[in-house]
Each structure stands twice: as structure tokens, then as C-alpha cells.
Image (cartoon, rainbow, N blue to C red; front, side, top):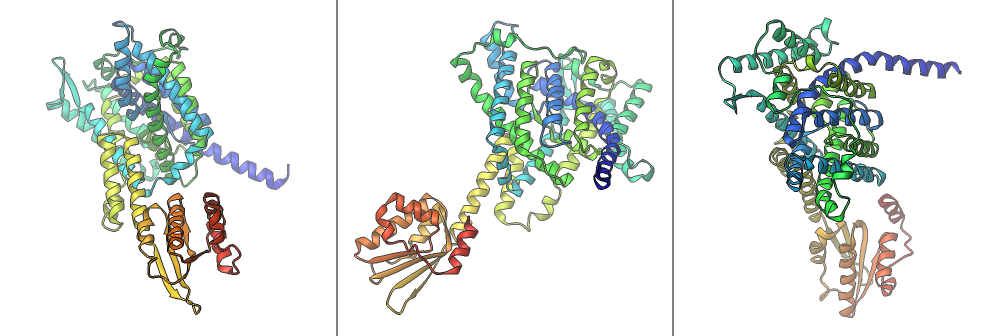
Length: 540
């Protein structure tokens, strides 16, 4: 091997090995944080906790290996769980009591969802995430931070007389105390030079767990959380192939009409959340992920998890940030998190059930603080009003509806604002040539939004016999613009006047002549103007 190549290979291996410790420790922390989230979302969806845990394991493992963003963590998420509630309930109503038919309809839906997501990857639709404006991105992270915060407030409730009520007295003080202690450890450790490289979230969880276990304190734990929700604990075996899906869910058009809309909504929410999280991790790590590869991986993971009894999922922004902040940068961190989660289910359920909920809530609160774009308060009065409205709207819509609705609404609002601003930029500079020809030099983009302003620039009735319309500084953008030019030429011809159109792009010329061959006579093709050729190349 050439000495230079050997040096490059040695440096590559050295960097990978050096970060392996961070990846492993960060993966262990993420695995602990995945447990209550997966269990909670399973309860939200109305299924057994193991269905959520299996989803977190399988989706996390597959996307870590094959996904387009090393270091990003995927699993069961609340954004999908809230859609699954009605699906499971409607499915259960179709079967006999206790048959749990809704669970099998859920598995079938997750499989179909996976195929839809894989199609998005095959057709390279992931690149459209680049069209999401920055105000929408900031609104997304702010809204998601608020959603994560609100989801943790439910942990401050306990069962009193069979009903859930807010904690009071010593229970509340203990809970708050351990949450604050966890946050203090995570905040303070990185500031101490000797401990700066330790995984603060994992250390905080271990310290608080040790205090609770050694002090034999009566606080809410992962185990009590599962049992209070109606579960029997974390203990389970390896995921099993669900043959009953094909026995209990009829492969008919009626079934497709029932699960199809759910699968489409879940696929859209899953991809939007995953690709937005990918963008966020790109910014945090100053690297570039592959959005189309992530679509394929998310789709494949959901197909597998549906076949093996998981509830489906997508990227998890909270756990992804825990991983990145903990030093997880490669695929190893996600693989360690997924495999460790499976080990918890198989062998260490008793230990994990003793972890205090307060420690995990403290970790998630620190995630909220790290996720929220605090700079948005500082820039609100410095950015255009429309961008500020979009940012706030997306934040609120994420909280009150869901991520997909918020992002789609934000993109539409941004697009309309952009169209409105550009619609006002159309200009027509007029002058008369020596031979009496009136020239209209058009400036600005000509598209559906600027058609009315474009038409108002012309005075067909009072113009001279010869008119020239010059598009050298304009871009003809869509069919509406072509139709406007077509109609304008028609008006001049009806008035018995001769009109010439100059500097249209080659594509525009071809489209106009195709729509009406007689227009070939009014379009000037041979133009001896170097500016035109520069503009034409710039527009391609």
C-alpha cells in the first residue's frame, strides 16, 4: 500500500476507534431514555408496551445500519401514536371482544406505510425537504420542544383511588427534587474539566437511580409506570413473526380502503418528522445526511416491524439530540442503543424497572432546553413580518395538531408570501424607437401571481401600429404566464397592430409555438445580443 494511502487509512481507523467510546456510552444513555417513551406511546396508541418496545428496537436497529443519517435515533413516536389510536379502536370494533383485531390492522397498516415510504425513497422525494424554509424549521423545533415538555408533565400524575391525579405533598417534592438533581448533574458535569467527556445524561440517571435504590425511596419508577398503565412489565422474548396478520386481516379492497388513508397519513408524518430531524442533526454536526436513503431505510424498517409485531415509528428528535450531545456520531451509537434495548427486554427488565421516572424526565427537560430555538425570540423583530408569522404559526400548529399539518401549513404560508412579494416586482419600462415602434421592456418574474400587474402595463387601444415586448430582464415561469402573453398578442392583432416578442427563452418559445403555430411569426428567434445568451444560460 502506498505510504500516503496507509496514512489516510490509519487516520480513518484512529478517528473511528477514538469515537467508539462516545458512541457506546451515548447509545447506552439513549437506550434508557427510549424505554419510558416507547411504553408511553404504546399506551397512547392503545396497545401492549412490548409492541412499542419492539418497534423501538427494530426501527432503531435497521435505520442505524441502513439510514441516511448516522447518529440519528428512530423508534416509536407520539406523532404517529396519536393517529394510531382511532385505527386500533376501529379495528377492535370489527372483531369479537378480546380478539384484539385492531392490533393486527395496525400491523397491516404499518407494513403498507413502509411500502409508501420506500416508494418516496425510490422516486427521490426526500430532496423536497430542501424546500422547507428556515422559519418553518425553527417553528418545527420550537413546537416539538413544547410537545416534548408537555408530554413529560403527565409523569407528574399518580393513581389515587383508581383515578390519575397530580402528585401532591412529599411525592411531588421528591419528584421535583430528583428532576432538578438530574438536570443539575447534566448541566454541571460538562463544566468540570475532569468530567467534561463523561456522558452527563447516563451519569445523572445512574446517580439518581443509586440514591433511590440505596435509600429505598418510594418514588415512581419505570416498573410502576408500566404496571399503572395496565402492563405486566418489560419482560419479553424476541420479536415473533406475526402469521396472524394474514389470517385475521382479509386482503380485500374493503381492507385497503380502511387502512390506506391511515397508512398514507402515517407515512407522511413519519417522513416529515424524520427528514426534519435529519436536517436538524445536519446543522448540529455540520455534516450532510442522505434524505432519499433515509426514506428507504424508514420504509424498510416499518415493513419489518409490522411483520414482527411492532407499532411502527420514525426519527425521534429528543433521543437523537441526547445521542448527539452525548458524542454519538456514527452508526455504532444507534446500533448500541437498539441492541441494549433488546437486552433490557430479554435479561435486564428487573434493573431497568427500578430506574426512577424523575431521572428520565430530567433528561428530557434538558433535551427540551437544548431543542428550543431560543434565538427565535431575539430575531422575531428583525425578520420579515411574514416569516415571523410563519414561525409562530408552525410552533402553535405543532402543539395543537401534529407535525405534518404544521409543516405543510408553514410551507404553504411561506410559498404564498413569496408569490405575493414576487407578484409586486413585475415592471415595464417603456420607450419609443426612432421608427415609431413602442418598446415594453419587462422586468421581474412573470407567473400566475403577477399576471394582473403585467396586463395593466399595456395600453393596446392607444399604442402605435408597431409594438415590441422585450423579456430580456424577465423570467416566464409557468403556463399562466404563457397564456397571458398569448392573450396579449391576440389583443394587439385584433386591434390591427403588429407586435413582436423578443428575448423569450428557447423553452418558452417552443411551448408558445406548440400551443399556437401562428405565434412563430411574432417571436423573434435570431437575436444578436450577448446579454440574451448570458440570461438564457443563467435560467437553465
